[in-house]
Amino acid sequence: MGVALLLFVGLFAFTFWLESKIENMVAKQSNGVYRLQLYGLETSPFLGSLSVDSLSLAPDYKRWEELNGKGQQVPRTLLDLRTNGISMRRLSYAKVLFSQDVVLDELAVQQPNMVMTVMRQDTTTTHKPLHETLKGFMNGLAIGKIDVNQASLHYRSGAQSDTMLSVQRFLLTVTDFKLNSASFHAKDRAYYAQKYEVQATDASFLLPDGLYKATTDSLFVNSVTGEIIVKKIQLNPLVGPAALARAKGEAVTHQELKVEQVACKGMDFGKHSRSNEVRIKYVLVQTPSLIAFKDKQHFNIKGKKPMPHEMVQSIKTPFLIDSLELKNGYARYAELVPEAAERGHITFHKLNAVATNISNIPEQISMEKPAVIKASTMVMDRAKLEVTARIPLLHKNGYHTLEGTIGEANLQMLNPILIPTAFVRMESGQVRSGSFKAELNDSEANGNLTLLYSNLKIDLLTKGSGGEQGLGKNVLSFLANTVAIKDANPSEGEKPRIGTIMVNRDPQRSFLSYWKDCISSGFLSSMGLKGMAKGNI
Image (cartoon, rainbow, N blue to C red; front, side):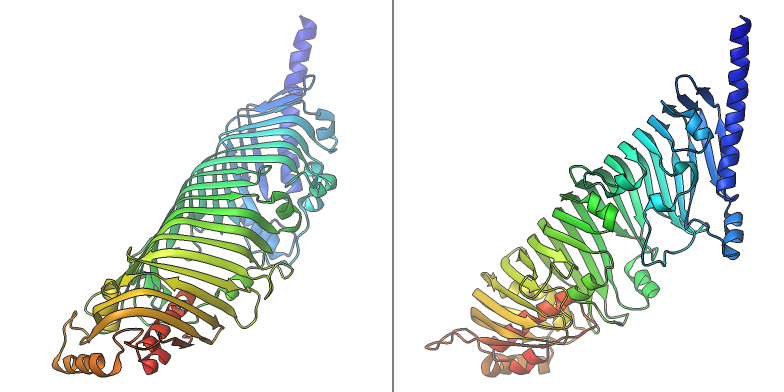
């Protein structure tokens, strides 16, 4: 009985001493930036187990500011952590106490709530691996299995800012984690472990401008299979079109996006963990839907819109996506132009595309090995359009090529976009088929388009009339249809005319508008309106 009592008192004293030592060690090694509090600590040195009922790791933001102001080394990101139960199995107490490598079989954490705060932006060009930067007992840490259950994560930029990233619930399983050099360089590992698996729900991300919020229902990640699956994605503006334009100080596109699922396969997590490269074999974007609107009547367009080359070249992280497939998409674009009485719109149904060799790695992209995009869609759900773009993404002058085909169409289907934005109405016109080919760069495009059509008649409308013709426009329409416009291609007794594509790029418009201008230019040229075609009217 006396021995049992002695052991009990000794264990109690050891537990109290260990709790104090761990808390003091954290404060000392963090130079006062962190304060650790353990509640309900229970230990069993003989079995190598340790558990706590709850834990609190709180950063001192004022202390961080003080040390940073003195030029002392402080972490760029601070973590505020609160948990329920934590348990460790097969822990070597001796190694912990004498600051040697910490080794344990299993770590289980229940309901941790993590708030990560970026205290300063990362301005370094090169980064050391984690095992080279850590000091103290964390260096050399080895854990056989880590289970994190019912966790939540919040990420923000600055101690006073709003949360940028929030994950309400996630589960994390890590297998065979070893924080050392050999584990870092091992080809069968990623981020020091043999395997990571994450299952998360109810995630949201506030874009840096604070004007859009992205949400998703669920997320799954497996570092061994290279899978990333994100379901039910939405991107929603937090303000209306006018407020968005005022916030940006120019006419901008107000967008609402929904995607049923994005699935990545063959993500090389090991490559990313060792060299910060992103390499993915295949990405599937399933059933995306985009609703977009731009107000050009009340707001001016400013600034230069990037070409695909510029977008890719601006990404600092080396990346390669072997293949990206978009299935069964839908897009609706509307705009309000100066002097228009209403919005014009155009829709793209059954949008499918495959893009290959998307990369900013010089060894991967060249004139001989460009990125290739093959897309097809039903314009206004009536006319089939197929386009192939070959884009050497690292070309300095934005060089790329376009070619494609146009299916049967009644041109009156374009009136919802032409009447309110171009003040032109297609009275009649039937397209049998068409094909086009063009070479483009940052400033101009040249090529040809052959469009076979018949019974073409147009009306020129008065601006701001909502589709009405004034007397002058009526006369001009008559002259255009009888004198200038070729009402058919081919004309009777002639070979099909080949329209010329000649476009001067407007850098304030998107590259998609640039591509559209190429088709419009060729069509106007086929109609006999070469002057209008060259002027992008």
